[in-house]
Each structure stands twice: as structure tokens, then as C-alpha cells.
Image 1 (cartoon, rainbow, N blue to C red):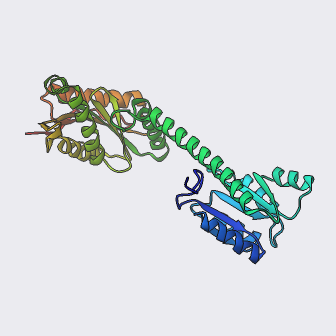
Image 2: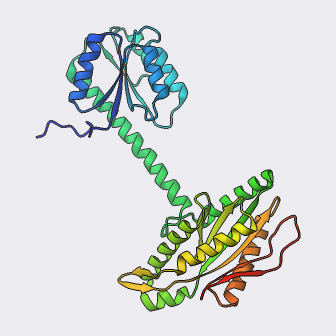
Image 3: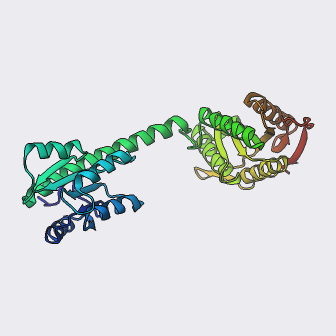
Length: 330
């Protein structure tokens, strides 16, 4: 059976070792490196705290000597726990003290485990393994939470924002626009004749068309804009700090990005176009009014032939603009 343990590293786990005794520090460092850990050394408590504050990728496990000049292990434990880092840091405290009250004091200060000097190398290894198990479980929990958050806010098929989340983002943009007196644009984007695609090529091909269309729309808008699936074959783009000219330019760029090349799915090339309706809101524009204006423009784009962009009545403190067709595909 291999000597490599399930909870020992694959070369990426960092351990901070802080001990003012150079002999002990070198011995522990050598053992940790032999076991595959990346070791960061600190010769005293003050240096250890500096490393923890400066590190962009802080070590997941920290070994602290209790008695160190500048700042002792107990003080560092307290400071670490007061910071309340997003990722948990496991602390193993080393000390020559072995009285029960000393152990209690160390654990109360925030240490997770305690090892009395001189210690057995096998026991050190076992305690580090135990700490890595805790860290691994915590990382799995964080990842599970992130996965659930993503699932709750994103469309499962296309990976872009879901309807509820993108409407929340629209509300945030409108509130921000009210504070900064900035325009907020909305593009309602509908796949033309999508039912015919499903009927002709099947639903798997239809799903692929939706995914690739979402990707093309996302690339066509600006990097700081939001794209979501509004429902079925309809998408919505929220454009922050967007003038009427910006809306016109981005709307046409989006139409062209979808139509310029067929979508390849299952060895079949499918020609896809979209109809787009847009509107701009300013200052205290209600969300429902802006969406209604964009939706009315989308209806007009579909009524007048599809594969085109129509800008609707812009809901603002200024007088509304008349409907105007911006572009039409060939």
C-alpha cells in the first residue's frame, strides 16, 4: 500500500510555520516539505502576522509557536479569528507548556489543535492530516454554496443570468441611474421562428441554438452589461450608463452577431436571426415602464418583418421619442 495518505497534498497546500527557535523551525520545515507541503517561514510572531496580512493567497494551515518575540502565538490566534476570513485557517499551536489550563487558554484563543514540545513526528503528521481534513471539508462546503448560488441565479441551459436575477440587476441599475442621473438601456431579444427550428431539427438542436445564441449575445454587448434569459427563446440585455446612440449601436451589433454565421449543431447548419426591441430609461424610470417600452418595440420589430432592431418610446424625464426602426437584415 502506498505511503501517500488521502489527506496529504498534491503540491499546492501552503503551511505557515512560525517559530523563533531556528533548530525547531528547520526540522519541522524539512518534515513538512518531505510530506509535500509548501512551507512559508516566519522567525517570530510579528513577521508571521505581516505575512498573513500581505498574502494574496493565505496559507490554509498555520503552525504557531506559543512563545515568540514581538507577538506570541496566542495573540496571533486572536487576531486571525477577529478577521473572520472567508476561507477558514486551521491553527496548530506548539508549546512547551503542557498544563491543562494552558491547553484551554490556547484553544480559547482560537487554536484548533495543540501539540506539546518535544513532539513525536508521527503525531505532528497525524494532526496536520486532521487539519487538512477540516480544511478540505470547509472548501467543499464553500464550493457547494457557490454552486447553489449559481444555480439559483443563472439559467440552467445557457449559463447566463436567469429571469429573476437579471430583473434584480435591472432594478439595481435603475436605482444607480437615479443617483448618478445616468441612462439605463434595455434590449429585448427574441429568436425568430424558433418553433420551426425545434420542429425541423429537434429539441436538442433547439437547445444548442439557444446556448450558442446566448453566447453570441454576451460577446456582442459590453463586458459590464448583463445578459439574461427572459423566458423561452427570449433574452434580455441590461445596459448600464447607456445613451440612445449606445443602445442603437449595441442593438445592431447584437443582431449582426447572431445572424452573420449559421449555428452548427449536430452537423447541421441552422440560419438564425433575432428581432430586437430597445428602450432607454432615465432618472426615476419605473422598471415596469422601461420593460413595457422595450417589449412594445420588440413587438414592432416582429410585426414589421423580423431580423431587425427597433427602438421604442424612451421612458425618461425628457419628452418621449417616437418609435424608430434602426436596422433590418438583408
